Image (cartoon, rainbow, N blue to C red; front, side, top):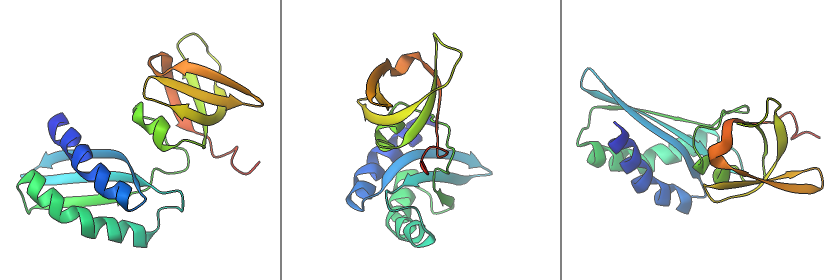
Length: 150
């Protein structure tokens, strides 16, 4: 299934980017010969029902071709307000957002705004300072919307 997940990301990401939408995650599972596909999308303007409908109209035919199946179930969702970061590429998607990370060498959560990420190094703005972390040293990361209102 990893192969289909990476193919979905490679195929859908440029299409969604042209719509102003980031593909956060793509997962596929086959249950009783039916492809169950889940896409997590993000937009600076928010993910509304209309955005999900538009994405469905654009990606469904592509997924039919990609999976070589017309028998598929498609779920399109937003990342949620307290999303757990699951891959290094997500730090780039959520650039400018508050995040909490737990590193290998610390037992305390570190909070800051994602300043930059290239998939290997994450730069957080913590107060007035900028601090870098190797992504490989991050044990856990999650969005921190409790800081967005401040």
